[in-house]
Amino acid sequence: MPRPATGPDVSRTALVRRARRIVRVLGVVHPDARCELDFTTPLELLVATVLSAQSTDVRVNQVTPELFVAYPDALAYAQADVTDVEEIIRPTGFQRAKARSLVGIGQALVERHDGEVPARLEDLVTLPGVGRKTANVVLGDAFGVPGLTVDTHLGRLARRLGWTDEEDPVKAETAIGSLFERKDLTLVSHRLIFHGRRVCHARRPACGACAVARWCPSAGVGESDPDVARTLIRGEIVDPDA
Image (cartoon, rainbow, N blue to C red; front, top):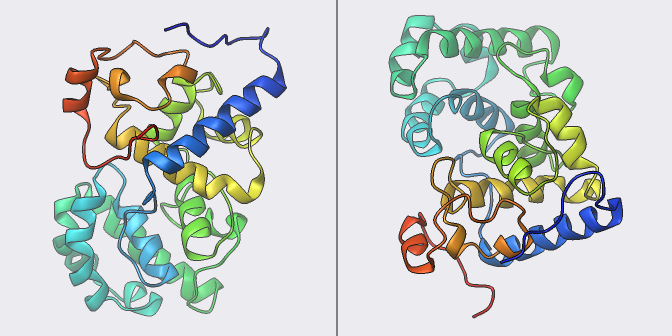
């Protein structure tokens, strides 16, 4: 399979067209691509996203029902005993730092935002334990404000696809975001993250069963045999050629 050209000789137009085509195909492959954290309010999503650092969404979703009942609003977190929070969130790992962040977030929301989660990135990133990645998750999925969530999956895929060579998440966010219309950025995040979790794995990507391999300059770095590659896929995906 010939690999698409990359580098300075590839026109900007060709790169944008290829990137958008890939995301369209991934929309067919992963029709249910979405935020996989369970939440009903912006505060719940903010808390769940903080807990997801160095953990899995599955593990976080196992912990948050009890946490959300115990601490239903910002004031409850602000007044919480850190050790009590630690005990509930222990399965997500790094519970001491995360508990301090959650209590600090509650205090900051009560003191500066009337107990409500702000809908601006510049406000969100001032909260304890909240960076651009977390802020963009909350903005995109709780408030409908488009943004890229450059986690390990999205960053890895963007580099493999030749969209950027940036390792720095903020620089990568700028480079990747410039390839798409702003209104599509949250959807781009979900589709790339879904694909990274299910097909384009860090250690052994399922290249031979990847629906976008034909447009990927890194195709072949993983398992190329289609039958073997299909055994590496996690969860359900849709064949766009079926």
